[in-house]
Amino acid sequence: MAVKGRGYTKTTWIFEERPVTSSKLNSWDDRIEAALELVHYLLSQAWGGGDGVLRGATDHDLDTHATDPTSLSVIVEPGYAFIARFAFKLDEAVRTAAVVAPTAHPRIDLVQARLTGWDVIVRTGQETPSPSVPAPDTDCIALAELHLRPGMTCIKDENDGTNGYVVNARRFL
Image (cartoon, rainbow, N blue to C red):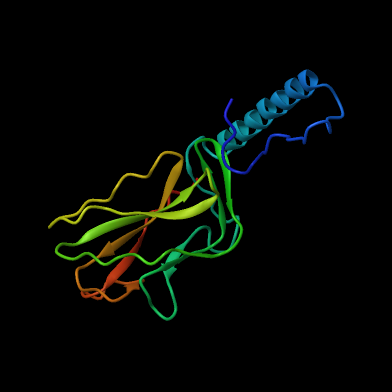
């Protein structure tokens, strides 16, 4: 069994603080882990069994948009999702780290929700004359594509022909 994300944390005790013997506690803890993994699986199946964002759970459901004032970062709104059959929750809006503008050719970066840290990261794409979207990392789901241009100074919500812009990549359950 593998515990992913922050949906469940194994019990930890400091030396000589265990209320029961170690062998009993370990088997009890493993049964709780197995039961919670089953609950995550059943909830995932109830919403279609795949990875994606739960629509309507919050006001903006992990929506990605430009900062105000515009910058080389984006904001991801709070929301819920299922990633690899496990629940994911982003408690509050998060501002990503600033992306580095491409130097010679356009590039597409991927904003993704990461299950293991219950956080949001940006996966950098390749600079090419006709860039493609990078695939999400393991235990991650795509939230948005950042279409970046050489010489850009900010990321906007719409394509203005000069700067970078955000394209929604969320898959809803």
